[in-house]
Image: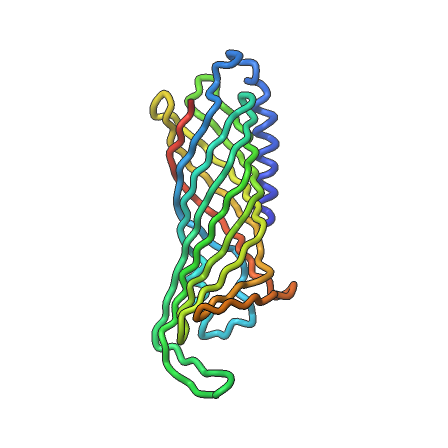
Length: 234
């Protein structure tokens, strides 16, 4: 994951350098606004903890893959540099039946159905670097964004509970857009998100309790997104 983020930053720097050549082209005739809508496949990159029992490892692995959707809007100050805002949502879920659970207090065991429904939402300001071809048929975009990331897991295990948290997220992305109309583009994008949770608010039966996580217990919410979408430039 770290290698991916480093690569994205290197490409962003290269992209900015290449774009300098066209900054004076046509004075102010370049598209200044860009709005993008996208969605696709996601994969959480964190390693499964060694503390997870072997019988639950496949279940946790099933929660690593998911889907995402998002939108962003940017205003380009020059042909190659823009500021904007970025939003993305993520979801994954899994369930298992005939799970044997033992109450640590009563030592009684019962067979239950277990499920997790995880959602994450990110929003933050973005810095965009753009290489726009001279005929404006193709554009290469790299983005860096730091913002707010929320986490919710609706859990069913014996009873229902909700685990909530939030943290600071870092998003880096690269993508390419191809014009299909004067102002409409289609494109593909790959992005990496970094973040980790250091607490949970656990809500059960209208009661809430905050659980602090030690340094070695923090849960990574880092992931890779691969998406396709439509962009509007004007």
